[in-house]
Image (cartoon, chains in turn cyan, brown):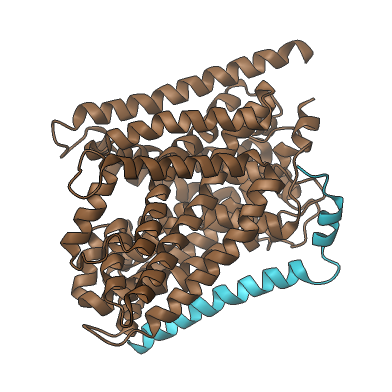
Length: 44
Length: 518
């Protein structure tokens, strides 16, 4: 595998992973609106 | 009345919503189409326009669709005709009729996509029972798949197998959908998405630890990621990347809008929308690009894998992977289990997208014609059965391919262009920006405002113009089609037109029913 391909692949994968972790961290951290959404659900 | 009716259904939790939206986005395209597109369009070079498309097309459209969905939902509309009408404040009578795109397109895609998803269920069954084991060549697997897809080819299977798995898939979808938003769709996502990711990680580990045969797994990664710089100046590579963005994020369909319509005004759409896009990209780039192509490269070599990838997604995902699983070191039962993990992963990826595709038409009947959920689901499943059987009967004549091109490829871009014009220029970008930021947990960087306003629509029109010139006209004129297929292709088009006309009549009648109360 060429160094460029390896570097590009790693940067791409790490960037996407960091974005996912950031989003879920923001959503799941204490005080997020998720808990409020769950308790306020009127049901289907 | 409709606002109260729509408000009866809500998501149970934010994570459930994100996983359901991710389930909508993560589909066969992530694991089959993406690696093939990357391999066919310059490897690592494809990823440059791919990421640019993600920034100027994928993310902006995702936020726009979430914004329109929540805006429509809070006004009692779970589907595009009502949402487009609301975006124009009811002042443009044509808007709701243009919205037929967001009603018929997801239904058409739902019908043929569900048929394809049922193949994955069939192959999950064949994996466990060893049904295709013993067919260790590409030709053998092609014959096995071909006989399954075409019910008139009974060289391997009788038609009962294909029909049976299709009926089971439709029945399962009907059961899930009839349970409602939080009781059915959300529960499916809460179970299905973790299972999908678990299976994908197990397969990833298996592929990357394969012993070197014709090539090493890392050569497969090199095949996808090593750039051919000359292809960067090829417009078709840019358009392939933009097209993949629509497929992978399920943009320009109408299903995101319906899911987002079950939010309240105080629910966030910016962070939640970004989370969905990020989850999908993780599934595509980290998992989708690292399973099928590297596995095929190990067993067929780089040249062989390239030839297989050129044959299309099912040659790679079913034919080549079927041969790969049979060649795995160790006992046959282990190979069967890995084969099951792969095909069931594809089934789960597909089924979570199918429920989203069926949702707009179900919501339309509920809201505009006062059907209860079960009756609405039964009606849509009956339509899917009738047209699904047409796809099955005329598969060999390109019936399904015609639907996939005009609705599942070209139509997505048309729909996206219409919605972005409505959102940015008729509803107004300033009003739209404020709408998206109501109760927002994430401030969208301001650079995205001019992107949504100018760059995204311009990019969409460039794609449409190029496709119109290079592809749509030859396809419209049926260049290169076999004469015996032509009547079936016209029938396929006639059915799309019929569904569109029926959709417009239903919209007209629905609005006429509302008129006296207005």
